[in-house]
Length: 170
Length: 170
Image (tube, rainbow over the protein chains, first blue to last red):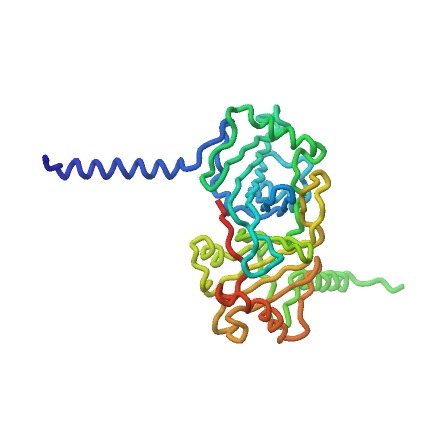
C-alpha cells in the first residue's frame, strides 16, 4: 500500500476535526417550524415544577431571563415578547432509599414556547417546539404540527395559552 | 404642639432608613447552627425534582455552582467541598385547567445542605439548615437540631448522605 504523505495526513485530520465540531454544533436539530434548541437552556432559572398522575411523569419549568423576570414580577398575562418557557419532562421512578418519593427517571422530552405575537400569530402568539428523548429528536412531521399543541393550550387562552403558574420561589 | 426642627426631621428620616435597610438585609434569620440563607438561591440552577406521596408535596432541588458542576460531571460521591444543595418544597395543589396535573401550592420550606467535611464533621460532613413557610422562619430549637436531619440522611450514607440523584438535564 502506498504511504500517505504527512501533508495529506494533516489535511485529513483537519477535515475530520471540522466535521466533528460541526456535528457537535448541530447536535440538536431544529423543529419543522424552524425553532432551534435554545442555547444554554440547562442553565435557565426555575419558574415551577409539576407532575401528572395520568402519564407518570414529572417536570421542571424553566424560563429565559425575560420569562423569569415576568414570572417573578407577576407580569404574565400576557407574557412579554421574547419570553421562552421550557419544560423538561421525566418518567417517574421510585427513589431507591425513600419509599414515598418519586424522582426523575428516563428523560421524556424537552418542550419550549416562545412568545412573539406577530411571528406566531396563527398559533396564539406562541411558537411551539418539542424534542423527544435523550437524543432530543425534533417532534412533528411538518410545520403544521403546532396546531396540535394549540388544541390543548387553547384551554388556557385566558392565561395567555400558558398552563404554567409560577411557583413561589423564595 | 411644638414644631419639629428640620434638623430632627432629617435625622429621623435617616435613622428610619437605616432601620428599614437593616431589616431588609436581615429579613431571613440564620438557623441556630449559624447557617445563613444563601444569597441568590432563587437564581441557582436545577439539579433535580421530586414529589412525595406520603405528605402531598413536590420540590425542586437547586445547587450552587460547585454543586451543579459536580452533578453534571457525575462527581457526587463525595460531593466536593463548598457544594450547597437547596430544596424548595411546596404542598401539591390541583391545576385549575388540567385534571391530572399537580402543581406547587403553598410554600412549605426551603432546606439546604452545605458540604464541608471538617467544619461539619459531627454531622457527616454536611451542615443542615431549614427555613419554614413563606416567612422563612429558621427551623430548630438549638444548634443540636441537625442531629434530627442526620437521623434520616444516615440512610443514604453510601451516597454521601444525599438523597438527591441528579436528573438528566439536557
